[in-house]
Length: 439
Ligand code: GLV
Ligand code: MN
Ligand code: MN
Ligand code: MN
Image (cartoon, rainbow, N blue to C red; front, side, top):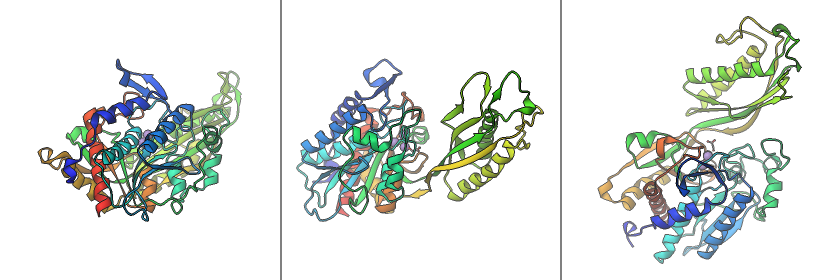
């Protein structure tokens, strides 16, 4: 059959997606049932419900379903020659605490829809095809992003991943929670034990580029570099009413300066810097905090620029904490007694370049699958966000497909991708997988 004659079912995709979004509903932002954001943290009860749906649905499709030791779920539809590894669609079903319905979720559903479409058309692929649901891509609950594809790729030690504690005051670890929900699988979490022929990931862009240009499909060439650090500022607890400014080692005031400074330096260097987690100890109105921890997420398209920014900040943070004037950040003539700064690297994701064969499969799939009337409405682009495809790219040919999302907003309940754009993306995903299968 000609590829252009094989159509996914856009209504079925839309319906399935919003059905699984019943599990882990978050904040409401609009009027409709589909206008409720998601809060489906990794290995939560809601995540288990979504996983159970994934397993049942793919088994009903005739897939072999396996779970590895990181809870990654691999559903495989046999091909004619099953001695070769599968061509996969992969993404994630966990979300941010104030997430939307499309980040990750769309990619998994589109993969399942691709397999359903193959079945509807009685297609036999040359080699096996499949769908992967990667565990804790977000790094929101257990704070390393893409951690399970990272373990699969051999980039993150299993023990480190297992021992990761949840953000906040809970004691759960990634391992204990996978065990609790029944997804600590028997399969080794390793690319050798569980090889991939190629990995395609459909994802909303999570940014404004496609929407601004009127583009329908992005063929993703690569992903920018990023590093996550935990910064600890150590000062001294003291009474807010009796300690004058000169006598304080104010960890919070110092952290505030460091965060502002990271923003300014990143801005000068054409990079990004963000703080999303901030904790103060002891957390009392009338005690100047002695310990403050904050996350620092820095990003750049260039590894060298990112390293330069990191080195500059490392040296300048310590100086600022000691009261030195850098970038005019000192508070009104008070140097104080100074604080110390410690850095801990949590995530290190260098810039990624995807595989030309896979990028071409995506581009060619656009003309196959969306037809000539829509023309080659596809543009190459770089991802600002990290994805599991970053790690699969280390071990297998990989690329991604982007579709536009409204106002470029993501990690927000108002995240939205239209039914048409979801359908276009799934159609292109199916075409890319079939093209790769025939390479
Ligand atoms: C990965 O999810 C990221 O933070 O970009
Ligand atoms: Mn995602
Ligand atoms: Mn995300
Ligand atoms: Mn992500």
